[in-house]
Length: 243
Image 1 (cartoon, one colour):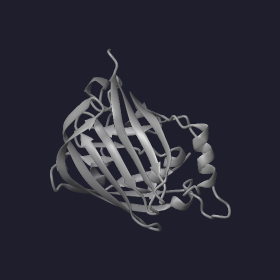
Image 2 (tube, rainbow, N blue to C red):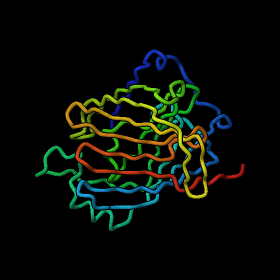
Image 3 (cartoon, rainbow, N blue to C red):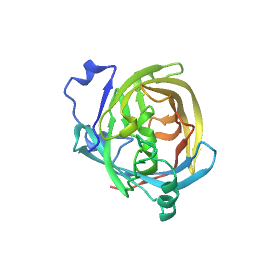
């Protein structure tokens, strides 16, 4: 299991006991919703290496590795062609180019998120070719700072199991403005644009620009990494299941 320890600057508040909100109090991570994103991977040379649809399904259950987080499933739809394409593309976790680390291809994983009165936060989409996102700022919003000019920070220690990614990432977030955004048939006012930069202790900086909506969460995530690779996750639709 990958060992990643997240330290936020508001450490004192994290030391207090917390509980997972009841399912009927969860809005973004309501178990009645399934989010579908279009994922795009672009190489440093500007070539689009893959496109796929990724599903994001909250469960309202505690995540087994951290009971303070609510679990959600990420379902991938990669193709055999994708796995062949990335055979010739160096896995960025590789410590040595002469002994590259192989990609591991997952069809689905379950991970954790937070949604409470102070914060909305998720583990990034980081399996398969998207492992780059581990070294970038995590999707993270501090609700008391969610206004134009608002800022916050976080610190991430990446431990064993991540190869060349092992190190420390200091991330800084700044809220830019509110915008109207259109995602398929979903017309959303009041989407907040947030710029974030993550400074890795060994690698160069990586960036995340994301749009956050109070009812739909992280509706668009655009990454630019230390080597010029770009990855984006853009919401296409949200399917609501009747209870």
